[in-house]
Image (cartoon, rainbow, N blue to C red; front, side):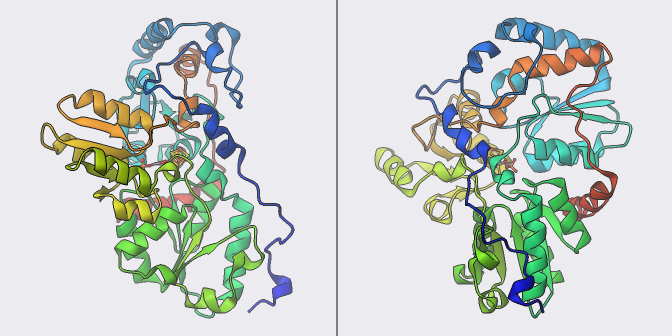
Length: 407
Ligand code: 13P
Ligand code: SF4
């Protein structure tokens, strides 16, 4: 066992929110509709956007639409576009496959035909596609600043340090590292190297069962809420799940507390899903007594408790599509998906639990101008924004991802 002096935990760190988290509020608007504007107008939102050739700045959405369609036609089967459900309408319309993180990672692992995979989603998703796709395929993220604030809350070095510290603290070392897909490739590799696994919100419960067959304890990264909600579903008491705070000495708990805990949760959260509150659910129920409330498991456990159903984006879509005509739904997930569900299910009354319209600011960075830029470059034989992962990292991350795909 290590002495306290040997522990890696840096006690002098100043708690800071990732820039991507601070930038989220810049995207909150009051209108329910979020039609794409020419990129030069959207750039007025004071956040980091990737530089793009000037000719794309002024193009209208209609002009961009024609150019993307033309490039796509010319690339034919050599191009596959993957789109996460949180993408804007003006982008998701081009997706050959639409899905949640789980479905899209499966598509990347099984569709080896296309030479180019353009991932309309966020960085960790494109990185996962890189790890799972065939070597001859090139993976492209249209805007390299499309990260994820939750993933940014688990910097790789902090996680590696915490893992070493836990190895020094725990008397029973049968701890299984489990990381949510929303994390760096290096963290997935840490899991692969140490008998761990990746999960998404679609399979978190099955992954927990898998992990508890291999060990007595789980380190869950980086979303404390998905980890806690999954543990609660499996009957693990809240008191047996403690949070590792990277800004506190030894994560903020005593050795005894870690040795008692069944789940150690990383202190991360999603800025979009933690906006939903029990008060919003109560208000929705007062307005519509027969309402069904459905939320994503990245919401807090109080919100999940107060809802009727919780599940990944695929579950949310399926439940609403299968619901009876005339039913009313309050949905606790990203607004682009909620608006799309409302449009695609006109026989139902569907609205977002949060009255303020706050899209995921990183998903939103995939403006159609960026999609046009990368596909037109491909037509001209130029690859922009290729996503690469170091071979050693990819090898170990692949082990953890393949374990997930086999669960
Ligand atoms: P899904 O796994 O449901 O696609 O969620 C990914 C995500 O980032 C949700 O915030
Ligand atoms: Fe990350 Fe939340 Fe956006 Fe999902 S919705 S990509 S978890 S910030």
